[in-house]
Image (tube, rainbow, N blue to C red; front, side, top):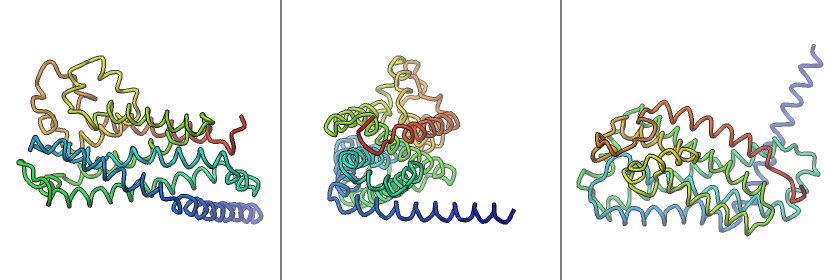
Length: 291
């Protein structure tokens, strides 16, 4: 009995040690590259400012729109993960780690956790930038951004944070899956770009909510997009599950409101999507380009 407990303790200790070492190696490899800061900070801020500028003409800001500003950085993580893993597979980086006896699950968890932290940092940086430009550049007629955010209750914030965390998780998994299935770095990046653009559009991050809602076919088709579920968790939470806070005319018979505007539905489906993609990411990950 004591030997079994000792073996379990030793295995756990070794796993934690491997995780720590992998985490350090991954962080050094990613953080020393300038493109990391481009993907995590510069691109999200650029898109945020363009999005704010484009929508500033309306002067009317509903709480869900503020949330959509904050969810944009989660898409940039796909590019970072995809590019990093694709380049590692074409170098000796992963081969050396694999030859050291590191298991795939251990390295995958380390990679996942590190990029998850980067996604959270990217969100907070974008949040600070949004608050700054809202004070300097635009002032919605519906009140200051800080005042609109102040309307969110604790429950709303829980839904919003849950949404953002799932969006980051989905982005990491998609980045790993694409880089795992496609050997060519250029082709992998091209497919990633298409996936991101498709996800941004059909998750209602870019276009007005009313636009896709006018088409039943497009609304139903958008459910195949994983980010649709995580993003709409945040949209519904930011609107406190009140459709009129998200739509100008929610009672219009021509509108097909996604998920019936019930928070529990995308909460569940987003979690299922995230879990399936994590599993898919694990099994699609390989140490090199040899299949």
